[in-house]
Length: 359
Image 1 (cartoon, rainbow, N blue to C red):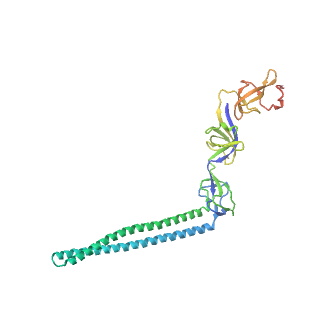
Image 2: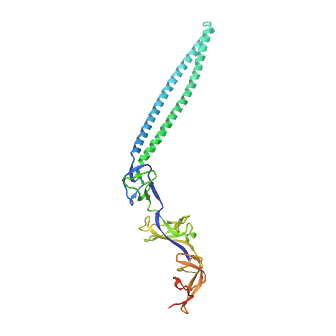
Image 3: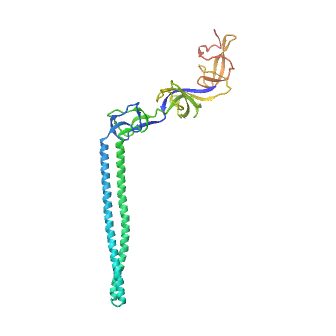
């Protein structure tokens, strides 16, 4: 006995993309209507936003001003650095000249041609200039660090304004709403002239070549469904095999949603939202006694059925213990044997009788 459960549902795309509005805008033009095939760069809707245009221009001007300030600061600081380098070079030259005069005066003093005072004055002058050279080189080193810091600070401002400008340009570009994926435009939920806000869903695009079935199973029958179980989906134009990939953890309106991944090519006419019937195979029971499902009685219950006694032409009421059930079959645990015949239709009109004659 093959245990199965049945449900109805519809085909849904595996890949669905809702296209939201990225910014405020007014719908100016609808370029594509539902049902049309689109690629990811296709423009679906055109929006307008004068305030955004103005904001983008202002962001561009602020960026250009900051870039000009950065260039001007770089030139100014480089000019100051060159001036300082020139001053340091002059000081080094003066120091070299003072060293030479001090050496000359010392040689003359050794030969008695120059007084000691002159030698001492020359040496003091040379030493002073040497100290000034050392200080000037340190100032030049610190000045280089200051230049880097000032340029870095101005560059941060430029990058900040550049990011703002890029954002405004992206927002401007988003006024042309694109599909972002290749597929079919399924839904367009706006009209020309409508004002939209950020986050408003404008359109829905799906890939019709990749569909799955969403089947509603009665919650009383869904308890045995597990992931990976085989299933078959009837599209009325053909039956396609599949397997269970998702089971909704919550029941709604007495049913549980089960997603079935389809395997193999889709039948002709298969499209999103197409109504389908689904059968999920739970298990195959070996060596069990079963009959077609009676009109009354449910799984693991005790019911009364009329068993045929052909030798007398009568039907006798008996108690039957039911076991596990399927779509159209149910297991018999007690009360019947192989080749017994029972009446499966509704016999409630004869509830007051234990034996009836059949003509």
